[in-house]
Length: 316
Image (cartoon, rainbow, N blue to C red; front, side, top):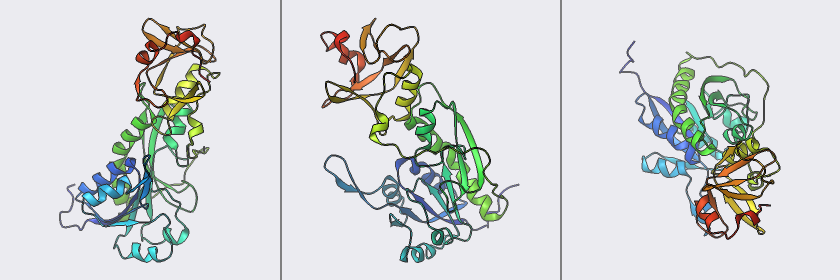
């Protein structure tokens, strides 16, 4: 059945903050069935070493698209009236970055539909993809659900799944899910607003995905190689994987388990046949790219060749 060309587009508010939330914003903006009446994002924040105040990725892109932007870190008080005045009947949420109190949840007639990057109730929280990869999950996904008072506990509208690829990091998975999840979000908004779709309660055992800290990126070389590789891919690019060398932070890119390489003590580095290996609690892992303190990222082989004797190098 062809869509009714006379039907008015669904008026929505879009709420999101980081780069991951930009692809769904763009997709909804381009969808003729949907009209974004305003964009809610977090307030400008300091970025870079010089701590220059800058808008969020979503705020910047919304400005470029000519969309009205509302900046707020908390949704309460007079802001609720501002949201009502947008004329939206439903809201889309992608990584806005703050829990919404009950009065905010009741602003829109059809509620708030959140695109979350996990298969709920697995990995509820701020870092679902990162935690999934750190745990070694081979299948990831996205869920649209209706926001309620809890942390990612509301009834489910729709889901999609995706397989983790050998070269994946949390950055590549998030980017892929942000694009793949955009049509799911659009159909979920339209389905809920029209009454065609009826959200269903989450089922199964829940797991938590709290926000990562810099300490989560530190590699423990006493762990098995597979666990080391999972942690590194999960924290790449943010907050970043690292170890210590000569008392200073030494950053790591993706590492590759190398079951054929044994006999290297945990944390010790060896250069073998133009490849750089580090010992773990099981077999070795191969380094791909590294960033010594105060230097630019480089190929691990270039770094190792600059060392007079890699067998004397040991990470802490």
